[in-house]
Amino acid sequence: MGLILFLLALGVLATVMLTLAFYMCWYYDRRSFPEQAKLPGEQPLRLLPTIVGILKEAASLTVLVFSYPLRLIHDASPARSRHHGEAPVILVHGYGGNSANFLLMQWRLKWRGWSNVYSVSYTPPHINARKLAQQVTDHVERILESTGAEKANLVCHSMGGPLTRYALKNLGLAGKIDRVVTLGSPHYGSRIAGLFPPLGAAAQLRYRSPFIEELAEGGDCPGGARYFSIFSNMDNFVLPVSTAVLDGAEANIHVPYLGHCALLYSNRVMDQVEHCLLAPRQDG
Image (tube, rainbow, N blue to C red):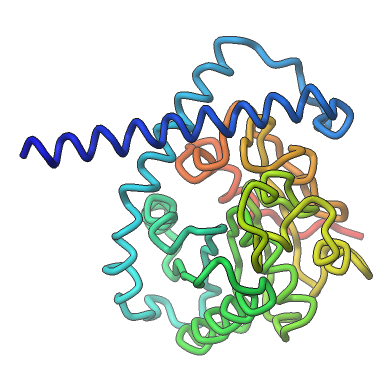
């Protein structure tokens, strides 16, 4: 028992230190590139909410790490339709994550009345982003076949956003997706990706990389889907934070004082996700 408690404490300490390290990068980026760090309508940061936001992010990263093995159970669950023909909500995780990242949001959506909610995994993160996007495509097509629905709605965290956009643009998902809701997605890349080994998706997700520039050619919102981007001024993985603002999206929604992982567990974000999924189509 003592060893288990020691390992748990060590894990918590590691996630706290990692959170602080990434917030040092976040602070440096804001000071070095103030124009790129600006968000539409953002108010100056206040000290107490900023500290609380950092604590929430550390707690969220800890939950994310310790829930990681639950993928073994979650991915083994069969994809079945509760309401045949109803458009499914498919949850797409970010770099290095898996389907367990969305366990809480998946439960919340089902509790709020969304019947066909699925969380998917794609691996491994170090391979080419185009291959990961193909995995996303395969998951979507399999779930559409299972549910009998014509279109799906996607909620994408972090790298899941650019992968979904690539799949809509190049891999045959055009016309099969109604809405894409992204959470803290680096639509124009992130400088944080430069801290990871320069392999596959990590290199391709660097700020303004060739892959990112290619993805933006012909429009940032491909495939005929409706796009919504939810982001935060305290996202410590998306640098500069303005890279989460998606040009051409139907709505860019700022939920302040939340870190990158905290977006997955926030009630405020959950409310905005449901609002996006229910938003009537704008005229014109």
